[in-house]
Length: 238
Ligand code: URA
Image 1 (tube, rainbow, N blue to C red):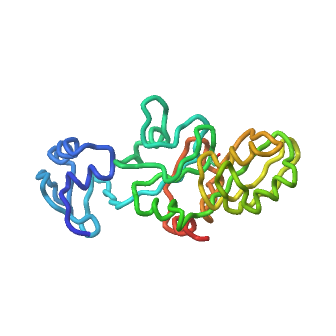
Image 2 (image 1 turned 60 degrees about the vertical axis):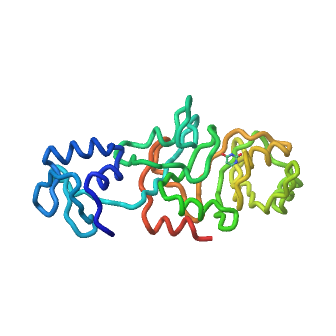
C-alpha cells in the first residue's frame, strides 16, 4: 500500500481520534523501523515498515470482518438513539470507525451477525443479484401442517409478494418443534411473517449460518471474533 500519515494510520484502526493519535505520537511511544517518530505527518507504509506502539507491533488491516453471536434484545444497527446496538457491544480492541452490520436481525432474533467496515463486501452478499443463503432455526409451539410447509418450499405468496423457494425441515421434535429454514432472500420480518401465516406460532428465531459459514457456537451470546480469510470465502460460496 502507499505511504500514509502515521496519525491517520493509527486512528483508522481504532476508535482513537486523529488528535488522540497525534498526542500518542508526540509522546514518543511510536517507533518506525526502530526509531521513535514524533512528527505526526511522518508517512509510513505498514506493509513494509515495522511500526510499533510502546513496543507492540501495529497491524494494519484495510477492513475488518467480525462474527457476532447476537444476543436477544440488541438492535442490529450502527447506532440507535435509545437502544443498545451490536456495535455498542463490540469489544474496544475490535472497534474502529464506520462499522455496520451487513444484514439485520430483528431485536429478538439471536445468532450470526456479520459486522464490517467493507461496504463493497456487504453489497456483494446482500444485493438481490448475489444474495447468499441464510440458515435459521425456528422454534414453534406446534408442528406446522404439511400444506404450509409445501407452500413455503414452492415459493409462497406473502401479502402481495411472491417469495422464492425456501428450504424448511423439521429437525427436532422432542419438546417444541424446531425447523431449519434456508432463505435465499431477506424480506422484512420474513420468517416471522411466513410462520404467522401457518397454524403454528414462532417462539424463537436464531440465525446459524451465512452462506456456507456456520456460526461459531463457542461464542457466548454477545461475544464476537474476527472472521478469517478462508471463512470469508465460505460466506460467498453457494
Ligand atoms: N426473519 C425474521 O422474521 N426475522 C429475522 O430477524 C430474520 C429473518
